[in-house]
Image (cartoon, rainbow over all chains, first blue to last red; front, top):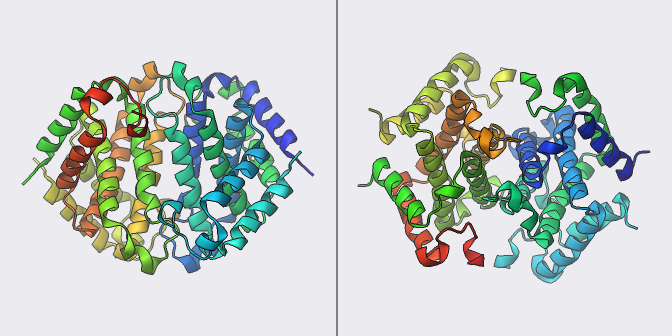
Length: 112
Length: 112
Length: 112
Length: 112
C-alpha cells in the first residue's frame, strides 16, 4: 500500500531526472495546477446532472492525479504537511460555516 | 501525526454535519476545486520571479488546503486512492517525457 | 452608444494613470483573466439548473466585465482585432464541428 | 471592417445550426470560458518573462478568440452590452483603486 512519502519521493525523482526544478517556482506550479483543474472540469462540461456518471473514468483518474501531483509539489516546496493544512482549514471553516447556519444551504459564508 | 484516512474522515464528517452531500456531485466538486486553484494563483498574480517569496504564507496554506480538500472529496466519491493514481500517472508521464528528450526543457510532450 | 475603440482607450487610460503597464505582460494578463473567469464561475457554483436564474445579476455584470477587460488588454497588447479573431475561429470550428456530425451533440470534435 | 453585431450574429448562427443552445446555460458557458482561459494560460506556462514573446501567435489568437466567443455568448444570453459593462466596471475600479494610492503598485485594493 502506497503512502504520501512514497509519492512525493517519486515526484521529486521524476522532476530531478529531467532537471525540471528550474521551472518549478511557486507561481508556475500553481498555474500548472489550475490548468490541470480545467482539464478535469472539461470532463464534465455540458453534461447534465444525470449524465455525470458517464464521465470517462480513466481520464478522471489522470486529470485528478495531475492536480494532486502539482498540489503535492507546491506543498513540498513550502515544507507544508498536506494533511495538517487540510485539518487546520476544516477547523477554520467550522467557524465560517457553523452547523446551525450552514445546514442544508450552499450559500457562501458571507451570505449566511 | 495525521494521515490521509483521518483527513478524509474529517472532511466527510464536516460535509455530513451540514447536509452538503446533496451539492457535492462530481461536476460541482471539480468546479469548486478550480475556483480554489484560482484563489491560490491570485496570491502570485503580478509578482515577478524575485518577489515570489513574499507570498502570504498563511493564505498559501489555506488556498492549497482548499484545493486538496476538494481533490480528496472527489477522489473519495469515485473510490480512488489518491496515492495510487499519482503513482500511475508518474509511470504514464515517464513514457510521454523520456529523460533523454525532456531533460532541461519545459516543452510539452507534443513538441518534444 | 459605446464601441470597442472607446472601451480600449478607457482601459489604457486607466492603466497608464496608475503606471500599471509594467505589470501587464501577457502571462500575467492571461492569469488575471482566468482568475476573473473563476470568480464568474463562483456565481454558479453548487447551483442546480433550475436555480441559475437566481444568479446575482450585478455581480454577473462585474465579473464578466473583468474577464472582457483583460481579454481586450491582451488583444491590444498583441495588436489583435477582437472581432476578426472570433470570426476566424468560427470558420475553423466549422471544419472541426461539421453540422451533420455535431448537430444536437455536445461531444468534443475528437470524439465525433 | 467587422463589428460586435456581426460577430454575435455569426456565433448564434453557428450555435443554432448545431442545435447547441440546449447546452448553453449560463453555468456551462462560464465553465467553458474558464476552460478556454486555462488553454490560453498554458501557452505561457513555465515561460520566464524574457521568453513570453516566443508564444505561439496563431494559438494565442485561437485561445483568446475562444474566451471572447464564450464571453460574448454569455453577455448575449443576459442581454448585456459588452462595452457598457466594461465602462461601468472601469468607473467602479476607479473608486477601488484611486490613482494616488494605486500608482505603481500591484497590490489588491483590500491591501492599499
